[in-house]
Each structure stands twice: as C-alpha cells, then as structure tokens.
Amino acid sequence: MDQKQITVTSPLLPDLEEFQGMLKEIWDSKWVTNNGRFHKQLEKALCEYLKVPYLSLFTNGTLPLLTALQALRITGEVITTPYSFVATTHAIWWNGCKPVFVDIDPSNCGIDPDKIEAAITPHTTAIMPVHCYGKPCDMERIQSIADKYGLKVIYDAAHAFGVEVNGKSVLEQGDMATLSFHATKVYNTLEGGALVMHDAETKKRVDYLKNFGFAGETEVVAPGINSKMDEVRAAYGLLNLKQVDEAVEKRHQLAIQYREALRNVRGIRFFDDMPGVRHNYSYFPIFVNAEEYGMTRDELYFKMKEQGVLGRRYFYPLISTFSTYRSLPSAAPENLPVATRIASEVICLPMHHGLSEEDVKRVLEQIVR
Ligand SMILES: *Cc1c(COP(=O)(O)O)cnc(C)c1O
Image 1 (cartoon, protein in one colour):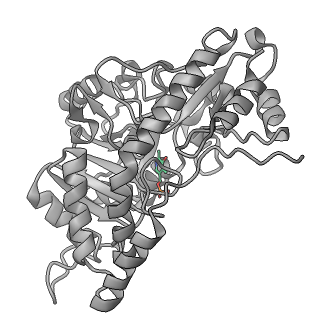
Image 2: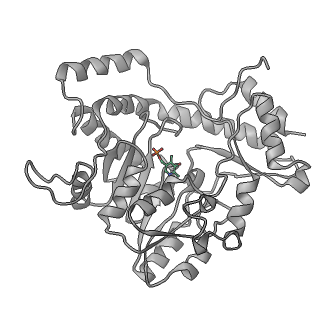
Image 3: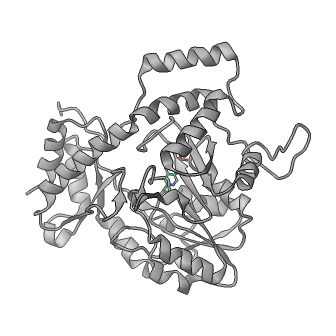
C-alpha cells in the first residue's frame, strides 16, 4: 500500500513559534501550575467564547465528570446512555454509584427521553446524558423529567464545544456540564477539560475539589482530587482558541461535501443540520443498513482500512457490553435495541481541519457505489 493513510482525526496544533514565546514566559515566571496567569486567562477566554458564566479548567475530560458527581453529592443510581465513550459510565462507577442504562433516540443518538421515566427507582438521584457527536439532546424534556422527580442533570458535553441552540450554549443546561479538550476533539489542549456551572459558589467548591479539597493554606473541606491544568497546556489552549472557529468552518465545508455525495447512496444514513443549532461538526457518523447497502458495516470498515481510509466504529461496542457492566439488568441488549443496532451500523468518517480535496475524494470512493 503506497498511499498515505487518512486518519479519522488530527489534532489542531497552535503555531509552534508563538507557543515557544509563551513557554519562555512560563520559564521566566517559574509559575508552572496552580492557577497561574495563563490558566486564569484561559478560564476567562473560554467563558466568553462559550457564553457561559463560570467554568473550571481540568487536566482532562474524565475528571470533571467524576468531580461533578462529587460536587452534587450524587449517590445511588444514575441514569445514563450506553452509547458513549466509556468514561461517562466509569465516572458513575468511580463515585460508588450504579449506572442504569437507557436506550437512545436514533435521530440524535442521545438518551431517549421517552424511556427515562421507566428506569427511575427510589434510588435514582441523577441523569447523565451525552450530547453525542455534538448533537444536542432533548434538553427540555430531560429537564422536565428531572424536575418532576427531583433529579440532578449532568451533561457529558465532551463533544459539544461551542454548540448552541437558538443562540444559547448547550453548556448552560442541567446542573453542570463537562467538556473534554483531548487531542482528538474539535478544540484541544493536548489533554484537558472543563466543568461548567451556574454560580460563583459552585465554582469555588469545584475549585476546592480539583485541588485536594484545599479551601485555604491549612483547611481541607472535602476529599478532593488533583485535576488541575498546568500553565503549559493553558498557554497552548489560549493559542488554539484563536483558530478553532476556522477549524469548525473547515469541518462544516467537509460535512457539506460528504452529505452531497452520500445523499443518494442507498443504505447509508447520516445527520443533517438541526434547525436553530450551531453545530461544531466534531464527527461525521454514517449508519450502514447492510441489507440496503449490500455490505455490512464491518465489511465496509475493513475495506476502507485496506485502502488507507481509517474510519472509526464510534461507538462500538456499547459500554453496557464491557465486563464491568454487562451483568447489570439494564445492560441487557433487549433493554437497548436501538443502541445495539446503531452500534452495529456506525462508522465515523475522517473529519478534521487538515483533510484535502484529494482525501475527501478517496474517502468517498470507498463508500459511493
Ligand atoms: C473524550 C470523551 C470523554 C473523556 O475525555 P478525556 O479528556 O479523554 O478524559 C468523556 N466523554 C466523552 C463522550 C468523550 O468523547
């Protein structure tokens, strides 16, 4: 195989010289972590960019999930989706809570609000939905169920950087929302993440929790953890924030090209834009109906791979099938028919700012028939 490989994603990297200039500043200041200058600047800049009032930076996107559950003192059972990255459910488990899986809605791959109420028990304390692929969940329905039963809502918004509905950030919804700035995401700080909250008191408490529970030099108010972001990654994040809009626009153009070419391919389903939503085009999932397309998802996936086109079966397998979780009653495939089917149909196509016309052509050649 002599052709170069086309990867499913590629990290958005800041200008190296500019980054080196900022590294010099960090070296000169000798302040390398613990709420330094760039950390403060990045928190402020992200609040403005994301249109949210308060946010705390983290060292990755998993720790804000863990910390949100701690901050809200979630116990017992937490209702969630099996169709996500495994960190969503792990965060529930690490808090000593029991994950309860609810099936998904095929129109956005998020948790199906129609199926939440049946999963609520006297032990349920929270719902943890995921804005899968950055597609907003039905947040109004989810909130009204939460209000009715007195539950907290924590959104795993790892895919939803910059996503807005009617001009308002999806991160404002629920009790808290989390972000991941991992290298594979639309906006990255190498590793990194954030927790979004509504008020200054909650931010203060989250900032204690992410720093061992320290509320002052000698006072520890909670069994906190260490999940602080350092200055090097905060500097990197400040630079990347300047170019993220351009990267999203490039992804938008790619999505338009993919949709045009795939619109009339029998057996291939994909998502169109939703009215009133500012999308971030973080992923481009296609769903292969084997019978109509004449080839199974795996057959297509491996055929693409042979030709150097690396898609990703994201999300497959379902979290509910992993050994830690598969014995839970809610993990039974009969309870999750839609998620089970979608996980067997999905391939995320290569989608990032660095794809060329030629790359797009090569991806489509594998699929269009
Ligand atoms: C990436 C991701 C996470 C975890 O983020 P990390 O920064 O890798 O720890 C959590 N949930 C979802 C849905 C993700 O895609």
